[in-house]
Image (cartoon, rainbow, N blue to C red; front, side, top):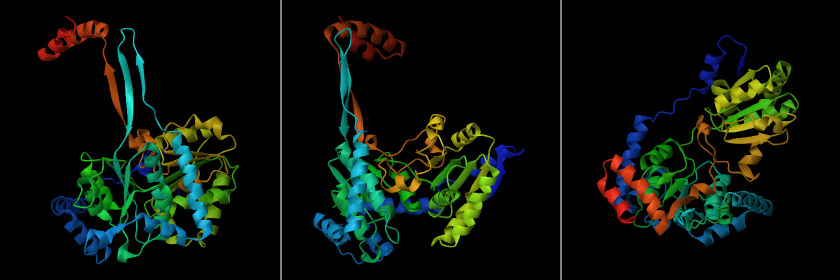
Length: 429
C-alpha cells in the first residue's frame, strides 16, 4: 500500500491520484451492448433465448425453460441447512424493519385562501432487480434490492439472475423466497436489462431497474435510462477507515481486506493519527494475507489503489474523508459520535470498533447498495424512497383563484405566454 502523510509537500496531488479512476464507457462494450439491446427490442423472447444459450451455455427452447416458480424458490429454501435458513430469515427481518422507517406518507395542508396543497406518495407498479450469478452468489444483494421495493408497496418485483450451464444457486433463490420476489427469470447480461426495460413476449416492461452487474450490465443500464429509471451505475467497492489507534490492529487489517477482496480495482484506505499504529496494521496485514483465499486479488487491490494516510488529528482526517466521499466509512475511534457530524460525504458510516463494514453488507439493516466513486457527494443509499414517487396535489379555492390568478397573470405575460395568463385571468374575473 502507498504510505503518504498530510504533511507531504505534494499531498494534494497524491490525494487526487487516489481519487482518480477511469469511469468512461468502453466503446467496444458500449457497441456490443447497443446491438444486444436493439436486438432484444426487436426480436424479444427469441433474442433473449439466443443470447442466454450463447453466453450462459444453456439449451433453452423457450422462455418457460428460463422461468422459475414460487414452488422452485420454496424448494430451494427447504434444501438449505437450518442455520442458513435462519440466517436468511433474520437478515431479512432486520433489513425489512430498518426500511419500514423510510416509508413516506402522503400529506397536504390548506393555505390562508382555502387552497389545498400537498403531495401524494405512490409506489412504482413494477420493478426489475438484477442479481449477479455464475461463480458469484449474492443472496444479500437479492434482499437489499427486493425488500425495500416490497416495503414501498411495489406490486411486482421481477428478478433476473444468470445461471450458467443451468446450475441453480439455492441460497440466491432462497433469498428471493424470503424477500418476496414475484417472478424470476434465469437470464443475465445486457439482454436481461433490455428485456426488463423494453419488455418481451413473456416479460412485462418494468418501471425501474436496480442491482449491480458487470461492465455489460452497467453499460446496458446507462443505455436504457430514460425508458426506465435506474438506481445507479456502480463503480468499484471502497472502504475508508479513520482510526485513532484504539481498535485492535488485526480488526482494522481485516476490514481493509474485506473490501480489497472484491476485485483488483476495489479501494481500501486507512487514515490514522499514529505512525506506530499504522505500522502495526501493516504488520497484521502481512501476517493475515497468507490465510486469505483471495490473496492475489487483495494484493492487487491494495497495490493498485490502497493507501495509508498519516494525519495530524481526527479533524484533518474527517476533512480528507469528505474529499474522498467513500462508499463505506468506518469511524474506528473511541468517541465516534463526536466525529459523526463532521462527515458530510459517505455512503454509510460505521461507528465504533465493533461495527465492521461486513455487518452492514449482510444483516445490520441499512442498505448495502451505496454510492461509489465519490458520488456520495450527491447520492444516497438505495432505499424505500427509490421505489416510491411523489405527485403534487393542488386544489385551488375560488378565493385562491383571485389571489393566485393575479400573480400568475403577471408572470405569464412577462414570459409572453398569453394563453397561460388568460387561463388564470378567466378564473378570477
